[in-house]
Image (cartoon, rainbow, N blue to C red; front, side, top):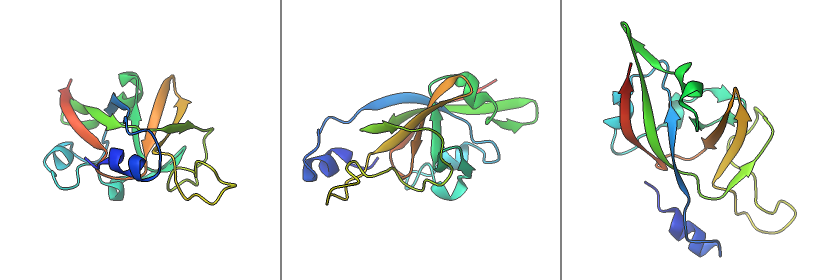
Length: 142
């Protein structure tokens, strides 16, 4: 996982990085392609444009990720994932995002938030726009 604490230190931000265990469904991609890919893990190339743009989406409530679960025969698969959310910004949906917004858009700093959060379909969701910030903990089959 990427070292966000070093990034925060270099930019004068808090070095304490917030993490959450969140749900993720992979729909068309078998989860083993993620948990067996130790070099990259969650890959933005597999991402589609969503309500907050092209990113990696993770949900607080498993019920949200169920509709994105991968189906193999009669079995559905989704993952519980440790996600480094860092300093997030809550935004209304905007499908044009490709990275989090700048922390101070009117200043000279080019420092961005670490993630974006929003609310949809009964769940808070967190969106990452960088790889190596999420680690699969459990594969759930049902």
